[in-house]
Length: 119
Image (tube, rainbow, N blue to C red; front, side):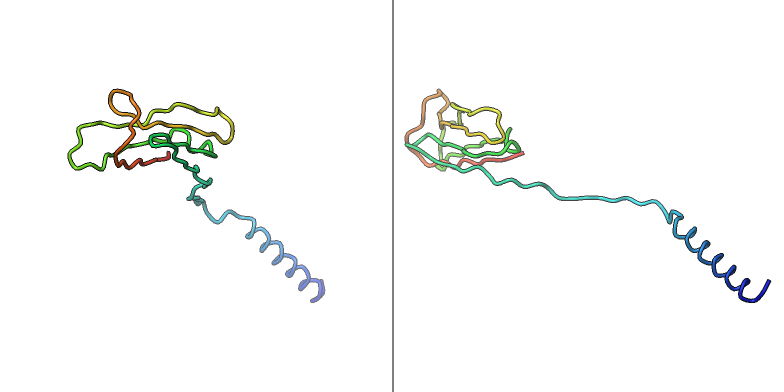
């Protein structure tokens, strides 16, 4: 074999060894994704005192919790919201709530903070 033949053979051997080394698995690892998909929140409207509407809510908001807190210093009346209308199970939905007292009657006066907590 001539010098050119040995050089060509050695070059091909080096290329082959490099390709085999690149194909080897270096190691195992873990890929981790963090974050969330965010949809716009519900639009809120209040009507005539004790009625509150949530409109354009995404399905991700289904199962939201509504908490009511009376702003009076010494209040004995327990208030909560009662669902009176729900538009259904589409991609977006509307709901209507009424603020009621412990007897189930609509509250017409007072200062209340309503907190909506989404899942």
